[in-house]
Every structure is written in structure tokens, then in C-alpha cells.
Image 1: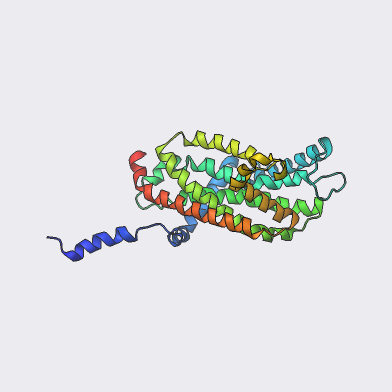
Image 2: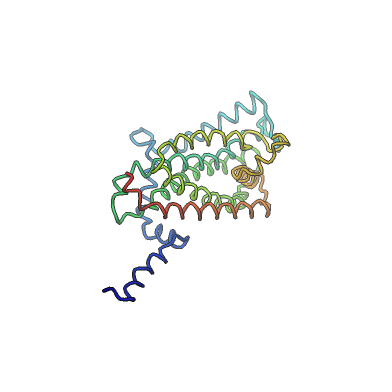
Length: 286
């Protein structure tokens, strides 16, 4: 006959087995070598077997920025405002800077919809920390984001005379964006195991999100009666705060940054909770 003490021992682990930021951080810390190896493999995957290897991670954005600068400054002669140097307008840099947070989000979300299925051999291992898989996707995207941001920090002072110190104001925006994106990654990683069509839906949603976010146009160009679309679009806030800080050295306003912080923490908490709640069923479904 089980004793009351035995019942307590059975109940307590279930009560304390709840997701938390501390638990997540300990998992990453305890498995940091594995996390780094998976992230690097994810980052280098598209370049594996190529002659230049990881140099392509630098070449592609530099070529892209050069094309932007020529086409939008000298062909279309588009202006965003701000300084103009030697016929070069700031539009190309604003566009390049705006793409950075969007591409980070897009890369993470699209890869998250297939990471569990593609790594089924790891999921089947009982002792494998599943949180590492979506986290490695985020870290891999951060590596690419670091490359493009470094190029921007070098190009912006040369082309429009902005100070690279503006990146200091962009750091809190970046940290919150990572939390926000990681929460979505956890949710989609889990959901994609049960709904295999989620990858196609995410692709469509990202296309819609791109055009509803002031990336290629300023927020002032959005029709006034539909302004609420931009106000509800968290990515629009991220893009605006990011480019204003990193290009023009403007400190993020407290209201926008505070509101984004609340959303980012909430999305991370819900996403991680959902992942933790459903992870035990992954093996059965796969």
C-alpha cells in the first residue's frame, strides 16, 4: 500500500515541472557547446560545398547594398530624407537597415516549421534537450544578422555620415526582438509537428506582413484610416525603432519600447509554455 509520503513524492515533481526563463537559460547554459555546434551547422548549411564557403554570408549582403545604392539613388533617385552625399540618398541604407530585423524574423519562423521533423533522430532520444533545436535556429539567424549589421555599421558612416554609436540605442530593441522571435519560434516549432501545413501558412503570412510593415516606405505613407494596422503590427515598431537608432542615433521612445517589451515577454512566455506543454507528444506524432 502506498504511503502518504509516496503520494507527495509523485505529485511534487509535476507541480514544479513548469517552464520558466531560468529553466530555459539553464538548459542553454548546460548545453551551450551543443547549441553552438547546431547553430553553426545551420548557419553554414547553405554554403556547404561551395568554393568560398562562409564568405558568401558577407558577399551577398554587400552586393545587395551596392545594388540598392545604385538603383535607388541614381536610377530611381528616391529619397527618404536625411543627408545626401555625392548623389547617394539615404533610401538605400534605410531599406537595407529595415530588412535586417525582418529577415531575422522571417528566417527563424520559416526554419522553425521544419526543425523538429528534420531532426527526428534527435527528438527520439529521451535525454535530448528539445529546447536546443528552436534556440539553435535563432542563434544561427543571429549570426547572419550580425554580419549584415556589421556591414551596415561600416557603410552608414561612410555614405551618410551617421555615427556607429547609434547601435548602442538599437541593442535593447535587438534583445526584445530576439525574445519576441524566440517565443514565436517555440510556438511554431511545436505546432508544425501536429499541423504539417503550417510551413506554407507561415510563408504566406510573412509575405503579407512584409507589405503591411513600413519597410520600403515610411509610416507616414500608410493611409490614415488604416493606421491601426501599423499600430497593431509589432514588427512595424521593431523596424522603426531599429533604423532610427542604428542610422540616425535616435534613442527609442519609452512608450514604444515599453509596449514592445510587454509584447515580447508575453509572446516568449506563451510560446515557451506551449512548447513545454506539447513536447512529450512529439515522439508519438513523429
